[in-house]
Image 1 (tube, rainbow, N blue to C red):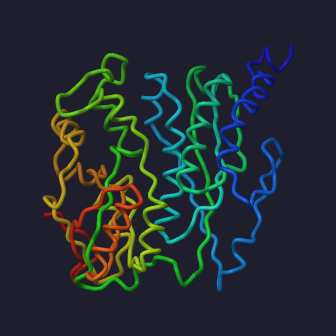
Image 2 (image 1 turned 90 degrees about the vertical axis):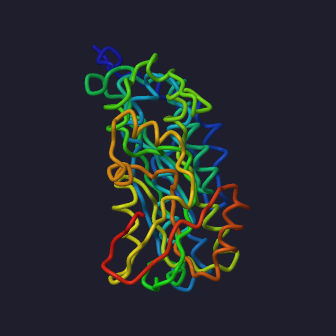
Length: 341
């Protein structure tokens, strides 16, 4: 009796590490002090020296049941981007620069090529966000996960000078809400998606006239990473008064999180075109409009609150970073919350 006969292949783990090294190397920043394969990842604190009052910010998240689609489609090279995005977008939303990232993959059977594809996606997400992938863990857990399934989670750390944190405390009546476009459903609401559509090979290969891809490809599109867009806005001299990452809970839960007491957000539905994927979800459910805005990002993955005089600079900076942005609403005095009209 040995470990391999119990379902854990240590040699496969070694091979997976070798295959992922080329992807990890793409993410290396000058502050990285260790190499892949050690017991801990070391990252120099030199980045903090120029700050008056450095603050570390962290975020952790996973991909959720979106992974079920990756299993059926046998496509594993983009869910890592989702994992990174869910962590670094939260950090950027607070005004910080992501510095480094760690991943955790738990699987029923370690297939080195598949693990390497997952890590490729993680590395791609790290490159997009400017963070270094400095470590992680691949746990082979036979009997706990089915052989062809896995879970993926991550953890990110970022830094900011305290004076640059986005707190929402200066939001006032008459500020403008700028929405940055999403790439699709991102990584939230997939438990509802899986109730509406058959998550089978045939079901995910279905085509709709409104989509340029199959349903599965549209749903599996990786989450947009907004780090460079927010950095560009700040570099343009704009003070971001508030920021909301539109994740689980949609507009109704996330927009109020950036507001101080006594301020309310008003979002105008017709200020931008809702992507057809959300219209298909709503129709096929059927899912009420209120529930759609309470579950999905509806085509807007991040909302910034800025002064009216900074709107043009904000839109231009976001566009220069490769994202599409819209003026979607304003702030008013009232009970903290959001009106969608």
